Amino acid sequence: MAERTVLLCAGGTGGHLFPAEALAHALVGRGWSVHLATDDRAARFAGAFPAEETHAVQSATFGSGNPLGLLRSGLAIWRGVRQSSALIKRLQPAAVVGFGGYPTLPPVYAATRRGVPTLIHEQNAVMGRANKALAARVTAIAGGFLPEDQGQFAEKTVVTGNPVRPAVIEAATTPYVPAGPRETFRLLVFGGSQGAQYFSQVLPEAVRLLPEALRARLSITQQARAEDEPGLAAAYREIGLAAEVSPFFQDMARRIADAHLVISRSGASTVSEIAVIGRPAILVPYPHALDHDQAANAAALETAGGAEIVPQPKLTPERLGGILEVAMGAPEKLSAMAAAARAVGRPDAARLLADLTEAIASGEGPTQFKRRRSS
Image (cartoon, rainbow, N blue to C red; front, side, top):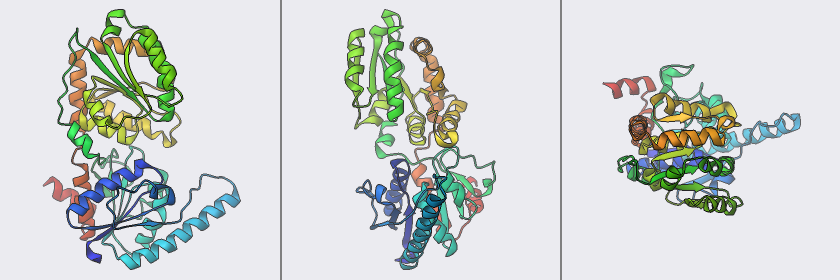
């Protein structure tokens, strides 16, 4: 079993767990046995994860500056390393793959100490702190947006993209068809909890500023926090606008595909899905994100021509109203943005990540892998 076993490490949030799940499905499809090391929080969300077994490993973050807190964190991580080392000795995996977040620190570090081939996947354009702590020790680094031709770890970095859900791959088959001058213009607005709150405040006021003829064409689908939903829906009704407002949409991939324009935050998964489906976007990075990773993710899509970045402090109702008015009158521009976004999307990211995992498991280094892939 050992030579066909891979240990995946992810924790804390879906942003780390979902790419790991996509890789797990790809590896299981190739005949690999997959195990998952995570923390107690992520274990609650790992029900659909195709792992033979899920292992809870102790870890902690060094977010506190309190000396006693730092000591407790250090002890928790060390206990996690000992747990992980025993787990790796028992499973004897051919490779250990981490997806960021502090729960990946103990198992990936333990694997490097035991000489097991290791890979970390960084979803964002800026490396997170856990991955940064491991980068010098691991065999290879897979990047969602990280460049492989610059930076301290360029030699071992391979751009694979971020694996996306099957629903996104299916939605990507829908071509972008711009709205004509008299046709309904479908606007999709979503974000995390903070993004949803801010968008709920600014969108109705921006729409109110539009000429009546444009308002009549507009159809809005907007994610809102549960506590904001009644007020937002009432604001749109007052304007006389067709709007669908909900805290959650089960079929978000299809809604992205249906949209003529997307307004959203710029987390790694969001930007990756917009790019794979190929839709023009106004990206509003979360201003308080650690390491400003959302701004860097957005910049990658804007540089390609697939999105426009508007910092939150500058997204006034007047500015947004102007953006919408221009966009609704420029179908050629939106079509070009959609094509540019799609050109940088990586629908095959899960396959590429599985290829890289198998390569390091067989003893091939990242440099040889990149040379073979480009030949």
